[in-house]
Image (cartoon, rainbow over all chains, first blue to last red; front, side, top):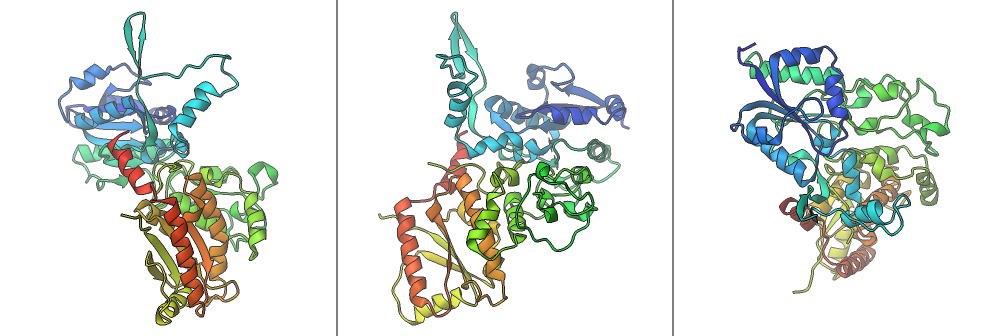
Length: 326
Length: 144
C-alpha cells in the first residue's frame, strides 16, 4: 500500500440505505478498508459535511461510492459535486445503476404522487391540504427543502459514471471484490477495469448459475409464490412462478431461487440486453401453452402488474424510462 | 404543415412482406407513412425492437405476420400472438396510447388488406398526434 491513504467518500441519493449496510456487511473487511482509506464522507456511518466536500480540490477523492439515483435537487447537486472531486465514481447498487425501486414511481406523473401522498390519503388529517414546497417562509425565515424532480434518474443520466456494482443490495463478497479491484487499480497492482464496466457481477445470465432442473416450459397459468406448493428442484418458471432470472445478470450467487424465492432481477439486465423488462416479457410469453387469443388473455390475467415486476429495478434504465401519459 | 406520422413496420418475410410487395405490384395507392423493416418471421420481433422504435421517435409501430396456422416456420406467429397482449399491457403502463402499436395478420395474397391496414393505422396515429416519447426523454435531461 502506498504511504498516502486512499481518499474515500460513500454517499446515498434516492436510496433506502441498504447499500450502505451491505458495505458494513463485509464484516471485518471494513476494518481493512478503514486502515487503508480515509473516509471523508459517509452520511450513514460517519460525520462529514457538504461544506467539507466543497472545500476539497478537484480529484482530491480517489473513489466515491454512491448508492441511489437522483430524485431531487440535493441528490443531483451532491452527485455532481462528488463527481468533480473524485478520480473514480462508482454507481453502487440497483438504484444508482438503474433507478431501482424509487424509479417505479416513474410510471406515475409527479402530480399524482403528490396528490396520493399529501391530499388523497386515508392517513391524512381531514382538512389538511399541505403539499411541501421547495421554499417556505416560517416566522420570517426562509425555509428550503430540495426540489422534487418530475421523475427519477439513474446516476449516469446525470453524471459521468466509471463503474457499476449492481444488486439490491450488492452481495457483500461482490462488494469486497469490487473494492479490492479498485484498490489494486489505484495502487498500480492491476489494470483498472474498462470504463463503464459492471464490476462485482458476472458476464452471464442468472439461469447459467441456477441449479434448478430445467426442461421444456409450458404454462397454463401463473402462480404467485404463495399460491402453490413448489418443487424445490424444478425451475420456478416451469412451475408457473414468475422469475426474472432469464433476463438478469448473474453475480448474486442465485440466492433467491436457491431459497425458493423467484429472482426479482436486481442485478440488472443480462449482458448485451438493452431492456430487461422487454427481454423478460419475451421469455414469459414464450412459455404460455396456448394458441388461442382468448385463452392467452385468460392466462395473462394470472399475471398481475407484470410491468412493475419486469422493470422492478429498472424503469429509469428501460428504453421508455417513464410514463408518457399526456 | 400537417402532421405526417412516422410508423415503423416490422413485416414477416413470407406472408406480410410479400403482401406489401403485392400491394406495390398491383399499383394500389396507400399512405406512405410506414417504413418497412423485413424480418424473417414475426417471432423475430423482440419487444425491445418496438420499445426502441418508440424511444427513437416513431409515432407508431405496425407488426404484420402470417395468419395463425400459416406460419412458414409452423408456429412462429403464435409466439408473436402470445407476446403481443403482454406487450400492450406494458405499453399501457408506460402511457403509450393503444392505437400506436398494432398487430395484424396479412397473407401474401392480401395486398389490398395490407394497404387498408396501413391507411387505417396512419389515420389513427395521425388523430393521436406526434408521439411524445422522444421529446419527453430529451426534455427530461434538459430540465428536471
